[in-house]
Image 1 (cartoon, rainbow, N blue to C red):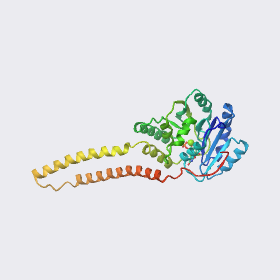
Image 2 (cartoon, protein in one colour; image 1 turned 45 degrees about the horizontal axis):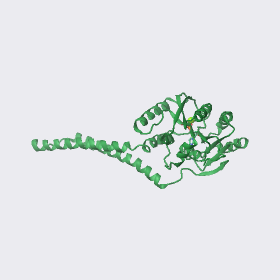
Image 3 (cartoon, rainbow, N blue to C red; image 1 turned 180 degrees about the vertical axis):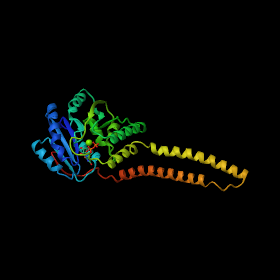
Length: 313
Ligand code: UDP
Ligand code: MG
């Protein structure tokens, strides 16, 4: 919990196989923080890296003890790593950031100014995504549009995890117990007075993207299924519409049989109806399954991450 010794700024960085870029990262971030205050900490969460990230982090910490390390026992994924960092960040303002310098640290002084002016949350919104390919740009655009129309919370467009949050906001985030961590959604859920800054998203400084397409797909699904029950309601509506049509059609068939006698042909329409209904039923089951799976995961109450070792925390 925040205390009198709490630093002014905590920067939280999840790192996974980023050893090649760590020095570039600190060389750019540390002078910027130093320019604002001497009272800062950087919490690096090593998310079970397979390369020598942890050794590199320790070497950096040796030179600069305000770099603190939290090392997870295996790869838990970015959302869990970020959560671990937020749980241990006690700064009066907390800034989550990616290790690949796609989020420009040069924005931090302005974030701090806005925070000191009274905002509890300062968002950093991407004006452009030069660093990302057309597929990622297109899918991100479509996703934010879809989420905007599905969710009751206001998910800011083109805004990742890079932001500044007051300790009050972080304290609320720590209280949220859910296992399914869609951080962008949780950030938006907590609310608080918010302002935003704009920046151009650069390409990765070194290395390749660490989040697989599969991880991003899971994240996209999490965003929808853990923040809205609309898909469940849609299946009900679809069921009502189809039943109405089916009843009307059945009535008409009955009437025709009574008036015109038995009429056997109709294989095509029968097949079409069976296949169509089967498909819709399977999709509905799948949707229920998504929610059931989430309830199952929550009910198990497993910890979100396991810390193997830490330094400075
Ligand atoms: N990351 C992590 N665990 C993972 C994958 C990624 O902690 O399993 C970190 C990674 O080191 C980086 C951040 O999350 O600091 C964002 O990763 P990446 O650049 O791959 O994501 P993208 O920019 O594609 O969203
Ligand atoms: Mg990146």
